[in-house]
Image (cartoon, rainbow, N blue to C red; front, side, top):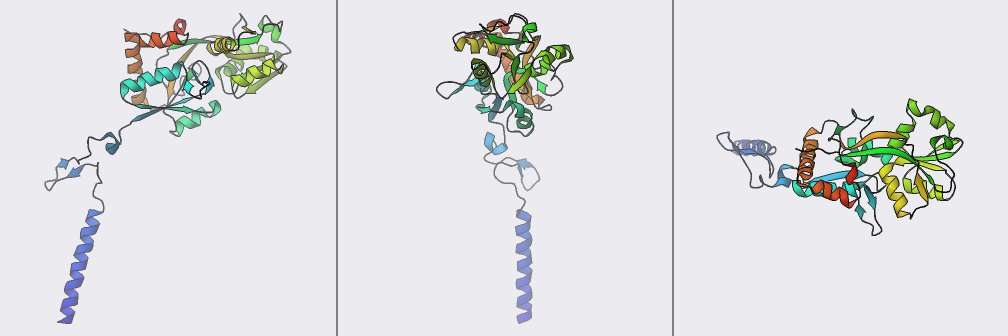
Length: 289
């Protein structure tokens, strides 16, 4: 009798164990479940974006010292033309904008690791066409040289024997590394790479460098906010550059969302309104029907 009772208890334990294992893979709240007939049913949280893993934030990677496109103002806030565009896009798409300042020479690592959703900060497309999933170009740009007004430098030829500063991994640096500009670059006494253009201007003010190669929009902003004292050479370093928004190469879905919203903003005048606020209305090339 005792052996029979032990056998019954062991059988019940096995059944209980199998039942527990069978439930171990059951969906948690927010996952699809099935009823007794094998049909899918939705949980109570199925309509909750967080429960189903829908995207709720949009993280923009930008150089926080690249005015007027993205920078930190005197109040410690991140502002700029591109960041204002991004905020409007997020407002229309229902995303929360996350402004993520990055080191510019680490931007590819930040994008590939998923730390940021895109690079949106006066980002030149030329020469990078196959490296990112791009939006349509939305602004024109050119690369120029800035010098002190009293430097005596009037042309690119006058830069021979001079020290020229440029931001690391920037479009200006790429322009100086082209075959077409080899002779010009070789004529410099030194091409000094700096982390940002605020540093470049501080070096120029201190007499440590003679010129800075940079984007024209940033150059105009720097000259204006420093109350003059600097000029842009008439001879440019590179023309016909365009800005776009760069996404990870396979992220076409998010790119298309952003592009569609930018097109809407262009059509209803919001894009031009924001560009005018930042003095960039003459550079707009975003087309709309």
